[in-house]
Image 1 (tube, rainbow, N blue to C red):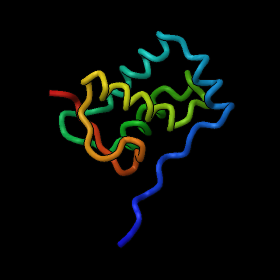
Image 2: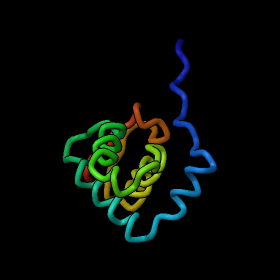
Image 3: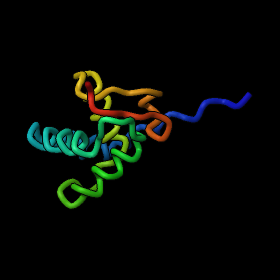
Length: 99
């Protein structure tokens, strides 16, 4: 029996500081882009995060994928996205727009 995949790594102190400098409007923009890259059918969380990072990387350089993953979790908690799998493992979870 194989062991489950590891959780995504935590952010470094530098990454936490960078993410902490994001304003409420920055977070709103990131969330909107995550929703825009989601669909009515399930997509891998890593795909949604990767597409979002590509779309807005110039505005938020250095913000790690793990931070975007926390924003996905937040959107699920707000019932704006639905998820399956463990969102702490972005390669092994999926999200879709909430119905």
